[in-house]
Length: 484
Image (cartoon, rainbow, N blue to C red):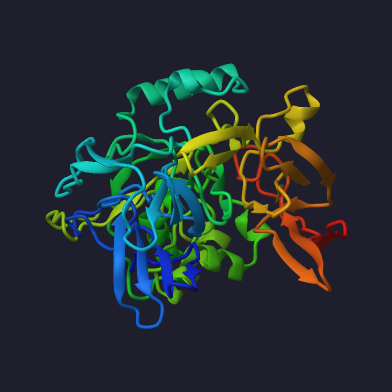
């Protein structure tokens, strides 16, 4: 299924002819018994000669990644004052919560990096790399641990009690705890930390800005069941049920009712989604659901038929299928990872859920860190400043000292880049998503946003709060900065 791909964008140093490429995790995301070692060049920042493709240098930020801790942002090119001289650097923000800073010519980190021991894997055949790199500077921008004491104050009492029990039983040895066959707490969750489009820079002054999404995940690996044998002349619904039990029931349940928190019921899915939409989600995944690209088109069609007419496949439970002897190198483990949302659709960790952090990379220090955005429902109840619950918009910085960003609370904001304070904001019709673009026409500067996402708290389907299927009335919104 590939891996170590570049999905976060590249940065080109035109003067040096160097292109900087951040890579993603090797695959499978959460189990690596069939890919021993450090797994180069996954989770690397790679510097290539842009004209020839020749490798100039690389640095691996995560060894043998079994957490899906991609380098999920575009590298940023800056010039800083370091040890009394000007130095051209490249900065890379990661899902782990670190900002890595390197000399563009040599790849040498600006500040020392220490390889520290990390927890061992408990999975059969898995050999987690014994150490991971920790930068001495700058400090992390995201929270890197999650315990019961960090639970959100907005949880209902019964839900808090349930989560407390689950977390007390889970493996939770801090950062880089490998997933296993029991619940494992992952913080930052594999959606970040920093994710796509989440960083920006003031290259002339050595300032770096990164959006952080603080959302824990719970990881668990389960040996995938074999597909139950069906007669050659079986109906599409019967074949689909066997495939559903082997591929879908782990998360959505044998009864198709879903599982809290955050796994939606599929009982009404055919009434709300077209067959094409269901098939596309199975083939390519969506949000926290992984891709099932190994399934053929006829197999996916059978699953869709079963979802339409489960009554035509009356089997109430999948028959037991004798499994072949386990070979760790070829075993197919399924991850039942879930981002830890409450039934309200909000993260189970205490806010702020989104922050914007400003770094001075001349010194490797944090200048300021502010919550970014609100949850409108909570702000109306007197709880502003929580940060939005699921950011998907990156910041941009102007030479005049403004940071522009938007969020799921339907607000576009201009912030003072030196303090993080909001100078201007405007509410628009839909939630903001993607990266704003800055351009110039006849000497005047413009900025354009895409307002085409869902703004509700319940962005992710949770029990009692299914994802809305109403049309989004999205639009591009452009603003002109005052003329000089």
